[in-house]
Amino acid sequence: MEKRIVVILFCLASLSSYSQEFTFVFLHKKSNPTELPKEQLDKIMEGHMANITRLAKEKKLAAAGPFEGGGGIFIFRSKSKKEVEDWLNTDPGIQAKRWDVEIQSYSPRVGSVCSVGEPYEMVLYNFVRYTLNTSKDTYGMIAEGMKDHQQYIKELSAAGNIITEASFGDDEGSILIMKGEISKELIEKDPAVQKQVMTAELKKLYIAKGSFCEK
Image (cartoon, rainbow, N blue to C red; front, side, top):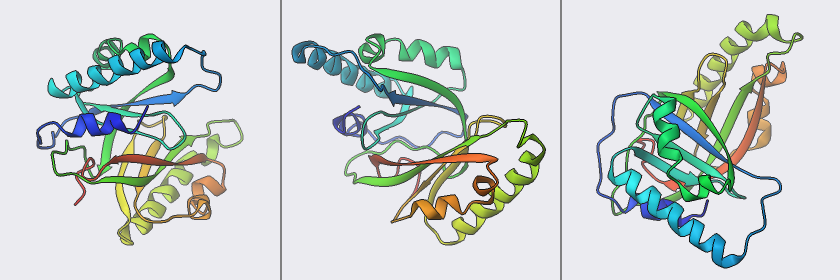
């Protein structure tokens, strides 16, 4: 997903944040995407972007942004997986299987989701995805590990760098989005990561400032 996706989305009129549950969608970059002629690929992406604009105007799509290196995210204003799947299936890029799609429930615990109008600033944020390791070796440590993880997040929050933190559900992990420069070592210091109760993947997310209701 290209950076211009975000530009199209956030040129729309500003909307206030919605106090409701959201659905989070990962568009994972395929390791071996099908090679297509440039003309065909350009047509698919043109339709993909037009679909983003339509979904945003219909107030279904709240936020979107690409990762450095490929792939990206959508955040929809619905808690219904079936409804979100129907919306996604109108996307020519998804119809053409340009990404591996993953859908998760999304409950922000720090920050929320806000649409951003002009003028806006495009920023790079640190995006951390935490995934639970529910193997037999870690099963007995999960409750304690999650408690330690939440305490570590509180400590990070005190520094003022957290933009948003949200859960995908009890067994589906969470995400953390931070501003500024952070190191891989900072993420690996998380007690839950050290105990291998969780794994952490660090990426860079390109998105409009204010998308998570941050100032």
